[in-house]
Structures are given as C-alpha cells and as structure tokens.
Image (cartoon, rainbow, N blue to C red):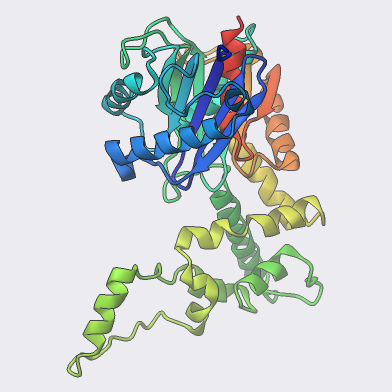
Length: 398
C-alpha cells in the first residue's frame, strides 16, 4: 500500500522543537515535541540529532503511516519539508544545514527542502493566499521584530535551489537595551516611566507623590505592591539592583568570602528592596513581567494609566510595522524593498499580539497611518509548525 504525500514543518526553538506532519488535505496526521534546538547553541551534529529524533517521534504518532506499516526512516517520507531554526541567520549556516539535511530526507534544496530562520515560519499564510504578493511577519512577545517577505524570485543563492519566499527587510530585533519596540519589555518599561513622570509632575506642583484617591486597584498601586514597595522612589532600588549572579560566579564569591582576610565592600546605593524576590530576576524580566498586570488593568478595569501605556506601545509597534511598508504619501525616493499593505498578509506571532485587544489597537493605529491588510492572521500560540505544515500542503496542491 502506497504512502500518501506528507508535508513536514519543524519549528526549532531555544526551549523546544515542534514537528508537525500534514496530509494533502492539510489535516494534521502526526506531531511531536522535542528538546531545545537553537542551532547557535548546539552546533551542527547535536542539532541534527534533536531534529531527527523529534521527526521520528512525529512519524510514530501518525495514524496515516501506522495504517500502512511504514518504518520511521525519514528517507522518502515527505513531499516537502520546511525547517525553521532559531540561531540561524547567516547564509553559511543555512547552506551547511541544507546540505546536511538533504540526504536525510532525500529531498533537493529549494521548494522541496527549505531551511530558514524560525521567524520565517510566520509567513506561512502567504502559501495559502495565492492572490497576495507579500507577507509581513511580526513577532511581539517579550521582544519584537518585523520581517517582510515577497514571493520568491525563483532562485535562492544560499541553497542553490528555487525558493517560495524572498526576505525583503528586517527591522527591530535589537534586544531589550536598544529596542524591543511594542514588546512586553516596552510595556513594562513604559509603565514605570509613566509612573515616575506622574510622580515628578506632582512634585512640581507641590503635591504628595501618592494621594488618598489612589485606589488599591489602580495600576500604580498594583505595581508598587508587585515590587514590595510603598512609595514610587523605592522602585529604583528594585529595578536597578544588579542582575543575579550566575552559579559559577556565586561559587567563586563563596570561596572568596570564606577567606578571613577578605573584607566585603558595602554598596552605598543598596537598599532593603534588593532582597525582594523580583530582584532575583534579570533586570529586563523585572520589567517584562509587568505586562499581565498592565493588560488586566487596561482591558478589564479600564485603568487610565494602563490605557495610556498600551496605546503608546501599540502605536510604536504599528510604526515599526509601517517602516517596512510602502509610504502612503509621495516621497522624494521610493524604498525599493518596501511592500504594499493592500497586497500583503499580516502574520502575527508572540504573546502580546496573541491578546485580541492589544492586536486590535495595533491594527487601528496601522489604519490611521493608511495601512490596511486584506489578510491578518495570528500564527502564534505555540503552534507555528502547524501553520507551516498546512501551508506546505496548500502549496503542494497548486
């Protein structure tokens, strides 16, 4: 009995590997989760081992394959394969991986076997909407990045094969110190900045930093409670205390402190707030973890401060997206890699844009800027591999 065409997509991330197999109709017939598979952390051979193990597990769960008694070998099983890998950005890495994996699946590089950065998986709806010319992938979770794609130009110089997508531009993705616009980190940072700014304004007018009208349910009250402080200035002690020491340095520190001749230094900026549990988190997480508090205050309680913050952050994310789009007004020079929103799919992934209320704010701001997408899809939710496999199946039926 012959095996029907199958389509495999694997999302190789820093915390887990997700493999999904679809049949020609786009129905999921097998899936599995494996260990972390960030390529830059693992290196080539350990990465391939995690990938193969996870795909073999997905094959073992497939009712379609078990019904025809097919072994778990990867050779000749799939009509096409798409592997999105975190930690892969350079042409050399992509070429090396593609060359290694081609004999594993017995597929030639190009449309049959694609190896890309994992962010590219968000563009999978472009495969299913054949009338659209391009896609804009937006990741907005703890961090943020925007990548635009057009339909492939027929040849990939990295893999020496045909390609369905061509990356046009990538903006953002600068990390929490320099960027992460519209992300969970920015929501937390802007919340603290707004609280501090309002406290400063009260001081200018000679008013107390907190007033009796400040409800215990207000966002400011909940933020202060979250960090274990009672007044706004004490936030500095929690937020600026050093990052927790790595285990190796803690061991070294303990060895140093065991020396009776060692006299510990005293940090005159330290305070009791540094002993609060949030001080044990890396500094960027102390801010990004505020996002659930802010969203609840804004979208459930209608808190004015919270609404100010989420509107500001949604607006900044919309402007980041707009930076890869064709300007709506005439300019002296046309950006050659910009795409038209009117002929593109907006593909969203990440925890923040997974919240419908926040997503709607971003779309509303984009419309205000003159950018309306005919297709908007949330591809996140931890199931990007499913969207990728369905996209492969849709393309295989054309």
